[in-house]
Length: 162
Image (cartoon, rainbow, N blue to C red; front, side, top):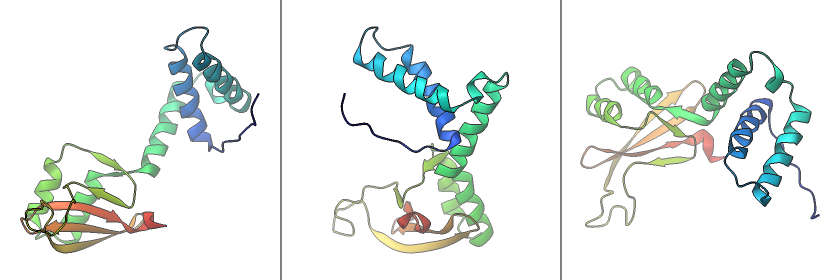
């Protein structure tokens, strides 16, 4: 055996991982290395968790998923609400957000909607015009990049820069 490693998860992450490993285990080839690894992970999680054996496990699992999504994603509606409250005259931007297919984005320092290659150079899609700053009670400062053609180029989550 190789050197052991440890992974730290919070309770919600462990519950979701347990379910993912259990489901994935049903799809791997029998007598394979993948089956061994998934089985070992599932057993290790079973030793730490009581929730999978609870009669309300389905509700517990859904609650864990919801809590993780609240922590790790920013919702489109959050941006719409901030714009409507802090910059109500920016109706074009509000409409753009409402028409976007994505309902949420994984929180990272920058979420880009427009190709930023050769930004602000002649012929580039990204031609920066201005920033619109939004303040959120838990997400902190969010900066929208507005392009010269009026599109939202993307946004920065300043709290995620750490």
